[in-house]
View 1: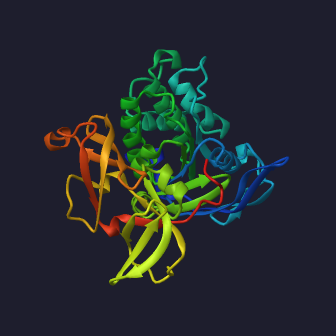
View 2: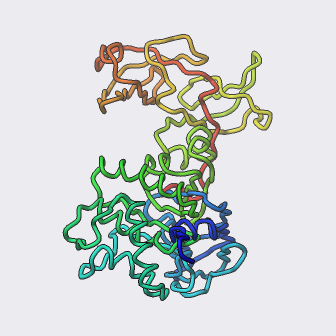
View 3: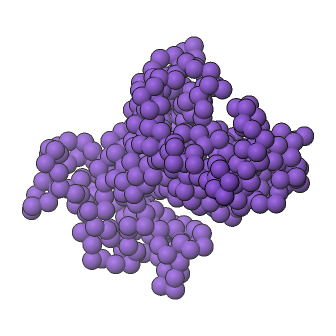
Amino acid sequence: MAGVQQAPILARREREQRGARLELIGLTKVYGDVVAADQVTLDIAPGEFITLLGPSGSGKTTTLMMVAGFVLPTSGQILVNGEDIAFRPPHKRNIGMVFQNYALFPHMTVAENIAFPLKMRKWSREQIRQAVREVLQLVRLPGFEERYPRQLSGGQQQRVALARALVFRPPVLLMDEPLGALDKKLREEMQLEIKHIQESTHITTIYVTHDQEEALTMSDRIAVMNAGRIEQVGTPRELYEQPVSQFVADFIGESNFLSGRVERGDGHLYLVTQEGWRVVIPGSDSLRPGEQVSVALRPERIVIGDGSGDNVVEGTIEEIIYVGEATKFRVRLEHDGWLTVKQPSRLETMRWRRGDRVRLSWSAADAVIVHDSPGGGA
């Protein structure tokens, strides 16, 4: 109708279709005697950004490739809004995918690369032109239509790859270590940019990385994988503050681990270690005297040079590592054993030297009871 302006294509499609609910149910992939993914079960809410985090061989990429359709599961279900797509060909899943190596066509311009999935869907020329223009605005690359991938920086190529995955407004977006080829500063900038774009488009997103800091920065929730299984799922804060296993506590950030038997006395719960320390640990009705347990203690929760915490131990500084905003101290304790301490790099911190005798203290509430990982580590 004359005089009526048509709404932008991406805006219209956003109203029509926001992110999908994605359910992985008992998803398993076996290669001969190797179980690459073992009963992976995950319920992802519409519009959620969830990261599969783990070391090489943990099953995270295999899981992602099963969702994408490039790997067929041995068993299990992949439900998108309740519909099982586990054995549907990749081109019939309507899922966006961004690879680590960008996978751009070198002989095509930026506009042609982005338009490719739209041509496969037989969009009209005008629809394609408008959608390409809009998505280039979204990824902050207006005016780059006629350039070729070789004329772009790594960060710009990554934006084009993201634009191509977003242009047809898929209900699910998959990203396989997309920032691995970028330098640290650009990677940090792109982390926030991708997160902001995902929030504005409301696309349900699965992101794969082995970078803990990247996962903590970008994710609504993180699924930590080990030996083909999910060890723990939670928000970044939940995983960091309340890890359930030694593997999670060690893989996300740094931790000191203390192991020993439980004792009760004076209204407190104690851990008596093999080295002979007797330290106060968080109270728990589930722990029994004599039980063997382990606790994780973050290095930044230990105070150096202060004897006012629930637990106080003495030792000698054996190593000092300056890492810019923080300084790490490796302290040998007088009853044998070690603790790593991490403190902000400030004047009072910098006065310590190797060989100094120091007191270390921490609150009982800062120790977290963890269990052994069934996968046995990385």
